[in-house]
Picture 1 (cartoon, one colour):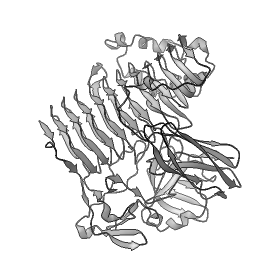
Picture 2 (cartoon, one colour; picture 1 turned 120 degrees about the vertical axis):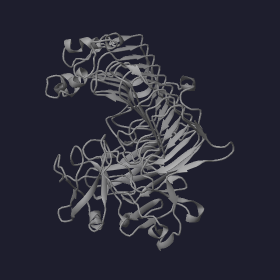
Picture 3 (cartoon, one colour; picture 1 turned 135 degrees about the vertical axis):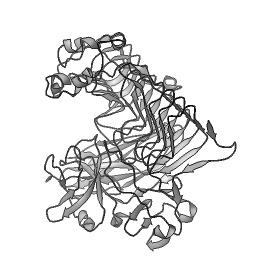
Picture 4 (tube, helix red, strand yellow; picture 1 turned 45 degrees about the vertical axis):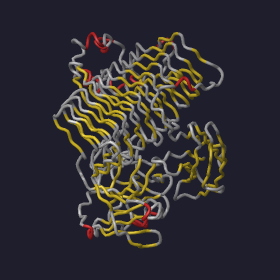
Length: 625
């Protein structure tokens, strides 16, 4: 069965409606009475973030782009105050007096990275103590509690609707407030109503969708559950509240030559195959353009989430996101020929490609990919985290990363024929299982060994497929063994960063070339990786020069001239101000670079940041001491 557009026609399957009859309310803000238009189901604001991919409530889109729920600050982040009790369950301290405006807000929420820079959550405000500067929140509360010095924002308050593109819904009155980014008559305002996938294929096989746009839903875009050889080809999936495409079970399903954008959570989920028998599902995501995803749940909602056995991610271009690009679970997956850039831009302790915390998830190959223009700070291009073992990282080009590959205590990982170009650190190699993570091996935390015991790793086909695994429990607990780096090239500040008393003796190293000079970039190195398309590719680095000055370096690494404006922001609620202009306009031809210096005044340490107008993420600031 094939569902496709008639040649020459455009077909949209939409889970929302256009909003009409906007009227002037206050200044540039318009409002529309949804009840008068027969719209009464607004959904709910529900806690979201890491591990909480709940169905979205009503959202607003204008000319096909998601609009911003009214928030504060408009640019950058606030930071939890010094009075925050470490690991507090349901309250945090704040700085400044802004929160007094929200005391009577009927449904105000806060969003933040409350304890770790890899875990975000949305929490509903229950009360605000303006005397002691404390905000209380409702259950479920952040998974790891609150602590001081962490990023947060206020969302969903009418009093903070104060710039173009923002909106707010008064659920009690059914009134939608909106400051359109351009005259309302110049476009179409749509709201999401459907709280189910736009399309569900359950247990069916050989179903194809071609040349169709699937847009605007509170849930997933397309779900394929069971069945086999189903296909999505030359389609666009946009503005879903959750993921774009979810494939669960079955075999041989494909998402090819399509675009996934503007999703509230992730892009494509490929889940299939039997781990105990190592039977491959052979699902594939190929030659797709996936971008500007993870609008709501910022962490652990990657462009492509792969699990099971034997699935393939080939030739995709992935860009513009706060956290992972590709997250892998399971065995024998192939990640090949992808172009991954401008991801991991809002988070820390993160990888553009990530796998972790299970030594049985082996046989995964990361080959011939281009990782570049990643976030700054604690960011890795390829992250083999928490004892991840048995991966093959071959023939990739990693350019300008804080770290190229991080081996976080695992075994039997092979890195061959990669190019590490202008990275701070080529390879990080640690023995965390003998130090801060020894609980995995001394019985205190049985999670890792329970995952090992859950698999028939001493039986066939496991025993033949992964011959090192049966002896895992016989080696020195936590000591990484069997890792190899062969025939790589490096133009890095540090080639291999050995940690936890590891040395060259703990690594099988041969044929590597470490160049003392800066690389002369050769575009042929990445030819054929990803799609042959022109995407926005602006490298940026914000560096503190002194206690009062910082430098912003901007480089156009794309194919066409890039114009825009960086907004410089400073932590609100503290005694500090930006002395130089807070907006930095630029126009850069391909290959051009510019540097701008900014000056601030401050009485105590403060965070300073730079945000490119229009991007879907807000990088953390740097601390000016």
